[in-house]
Length: 123
Image (cartoon, rainbow, N blue to C red; front, side, top):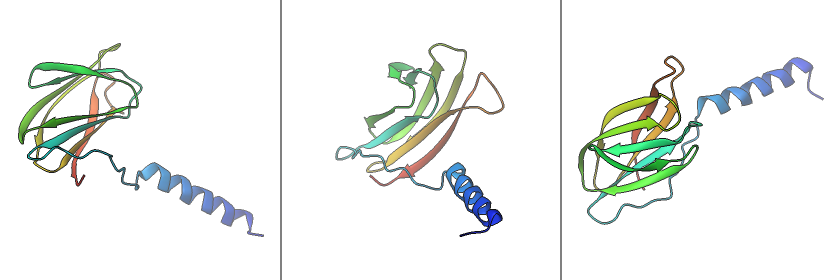
């Protein structure tokens, strides 16, 4: 049997690993030939209205993921909370044959803002 302090150290280590988000999420989507994909991963409790280059697209439901197939280029992404005042706007690059993953979270610092993590990923 492990000493009590060793058990607590194991529990604390497991919690720390879970909080760091060290696992890479795989997105099951392949862009069409000659295009890239914008993946919006809503990690917030909000339903969000999505605008790309000023055009309304759809509503991204809470804790869901949506893929948008597009030609390569820079796009203006605007996210507007449907039932609150949260908002955010970013320029994102879409690259042929890649997934541009945008993980959307509520801000820890500003109630009215979304925070995003943007990275490229192989399909």
